[in-house]
Amino acid sequence: MKAISLFSGAGGMDIGIRQAGFEVLSDIEIDEHCISTLRAAANREQINTKIIHADIKKINPNDLMSDLKIESKELDLLFGGPPCQSFSLAGKQLGLCDVRGPLLFEIVRFAAIIQPKVILLEQVKGLLSSKGENNNRGEVFEKFLTMLEDIGYTPKWRVVIAADFGIPQLRERLFVVATRGRNGFYFPGRTHAPIEECGGLFSFAPYVGSGIALNGLGEPAPKIRGQTIYDREDSHVDVTPERDRERIAKVPEGSYLAAQVHLGEELRRGLSPKDTTKYLRLHRNRPSNTLRCGEIFYHPTENRYLTPREYMRIHGYPDNYYLKGPIRSRTGTVRNLDQHRQIANSVPPPLARILGTQIADYLDE
Image (cartoon, rainbow, N blue to C red; front, side, top):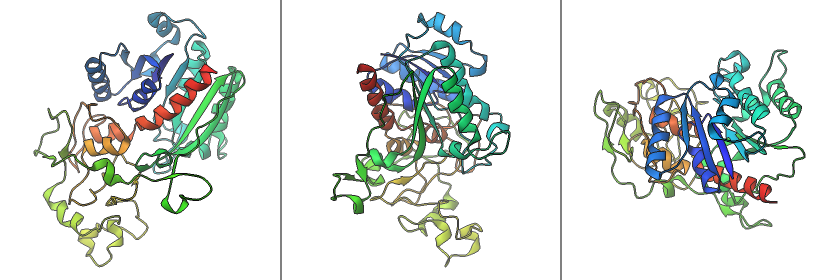
């Protein structure tokens, strides 16, 4: 089975789609650090994937098909996760007014010409309520579905929680699966649930805690002042400034800084009691909150922030998958995507594998 990846990022969805039995013919990505990660993975695993570093708006799908030597309607799967910041509930929700918003429709432009058998899209659930030109809730998503139908596809969609499939993260994302013609695809049923929902009529396994994912990594390397590029392939680098360790030490496992009302304002950074997801310390026996780009969560038991490798563990990346690009300091910035952001922006590979396997079964039938 053949597939093409759009908005490939660090390759999280690629990993799972390959594990489901697909050959990924091409990756298209604009971020230079993600491109370095994708190239390193392709070289190490000897994968024959054409990696294209370009603005997707400037790529002609006809030229891409010619380059990959495929004809219209031959491709099995077109997949990708366009930038989500314009629709994220945690952001400004500018929708199509954000320059990144219209990138959602690029997957339709490619599908109209390539005519794959199946389209797989990942997005934040905020897309479901995003307002369009007429300022109506849900208008952008409705337009997207209509555009798919206009080119001959029947879409189905579901908001999926990663923890429901054994991934130690309460990550909610919208997935759309559109098939050419009628749609006989079914989303897979959950396999895991909170402990209080286990042992009843449905035989669910309990949610996986973050402690299982983080176990066995050992001590991280210290962050070197002023350094952003590291040669360590494991990306296990501690970015915690020394002045933050005192603050982190005051937060109990599974709690967050704003709840520590007994601390002074200087330590609580002026947070309000509503800031329940900021400066959060993970709990070993519970799934992590959704990994975020700007803020890094506290380690469950150590007085530091999570390392990029620990992000990868929580996301379900294999340990032999290596990131390229800078590791920013806790308060620093770097050009384009640093290693923490590469992971936070990506689809957990095990979830991509589960969805990819379900699509492969559909194609087989």
